[in-house]
Amino acid sequence: MDKLDYKKAFKDLYLPKNDPGIIEVPSMKFACIDGKGDPNGDEFALATAALYSFSYSVKMSYKSKEVPKGYYDYTVFPLEGVWDLVDKTKPITDKSNYAYSIMIRQPEFLDDELFERFIIETKNKKPNDYLDKINLVTITEGMCCQMLHLGSYDDEPASFEKMDRYCRDNGYERISLKHREIYLSDPRKTEAGKLKTVLRFKVRNDNHSLEKEV
Image (cartoon, rainbow, N blue to C red; front, side, top):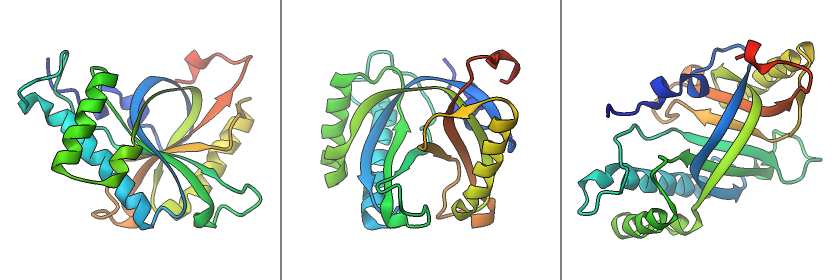
């Protein structure tokens, strides 16, 4: 089997247009950490590091003495975050009020037993207290509105406004204030104006055919 590259195999999920569209998001496995507070703080950085360390342990397991059953080569998936507010009466500009679940998608062969194995192996190689906070979860988002946001994270409200307008004009209703962000660029190496981020939130429309929108 050729190496699975998420940008090619799941182009609709990770490389949408920079205009809003509707997509049906399937069930996927994630290594996930829940947290609160400013994403520019140390806790967020440590949680992110733990997720990447774990994900690369799974990826590189083909070099281990016990190669996981069903293993296939793949590109490690990007970091994702589901964002909400702790106190919904406060403005979205108050980053200390953020509640988040950050995660990295995992391959299908990773089951609960292998998850425990790789947590232990990662602790031995790259100790990080946040490894104990990782959970293996399956998430099904279903029908969503999404688009590719180009530019600074602080400029995302303009893209969300565009998505909201698209939904209103096409008969869709946003069903959750939470939203998902998929980080296709490394902010440490990319100018703010060139960052690429997939923005997504859940919607519904009982009287509209999804087939025409995908």
